[in-house]
Length: 337
Image 1: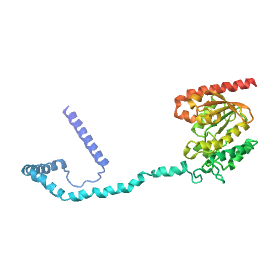
Image 2: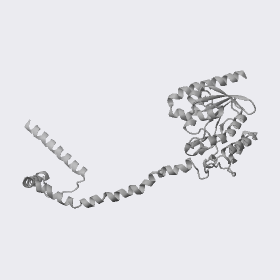
Image 3: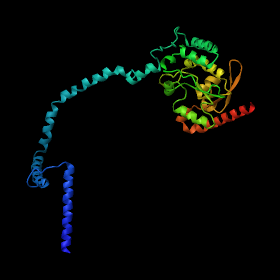
Image 4: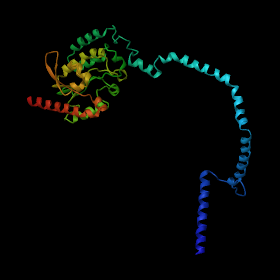
């Protein structure tokens, strides 16, 4: 029994030694520095004891002196330390004027947001430098002369009466089937639409595709456009002047497409095309009469913009009600025909 116990103890000791060696190997020890092992903890004990015995009397004998001595040299640098704040106060004085100016990041955005390099204030890109009212009248006169959607698109590609043309990458005219019975109109293109050249290409466009699919529509059975065919810089909202200049083009586009039902996506499109002043949450879910230049009338349904639904998913239930109304209206008009 004793022999077994001794063997078991040897085994444990050997395992401890192996573990200890593994620890040294893991720590990076790869060679012995002395013939005999040293217990560094034991060697350090006398040193710590001597240090403690020497420190205690010094602390007891001259507690005041030990506190005063460090204070003496600190009094000498006091005058320089009083002077130090004076130069420090100068940088804020030099930087003070820049506080009235926007930070660099904002200043870089200001030209593209408020005054594009090719769009000076109160100038709308045309050679004559027409005022907004004149540019809108010119747009209406030109749009009325277009006989087809292709001609209207070609006109917009060369139109210089709106400054957004000079800041946008592409004209975003339309997508889908111009012979469709329903036409969707949004506000203005975003970055994805500007890059691709078609409306509703980003996340909001993907949501619109799913919303249309829920009532049996897709881009082959719907026509899609915007009130403003060029992206405003920085995705800002179009100004009233920009909308007034672009409005004749979208109105002519609706007239040439001649859908059975017009769907206004969001407040700007609804207010521009129907004339209502109500917010979109009050205006949505209703049909408005949309009158064409030739006297014809189209029913216009106001609903929420897909971009708004991405920010407020809880409102999708309202949009679903609106699309069910659209589905019923399309089925009813088809039955009437």
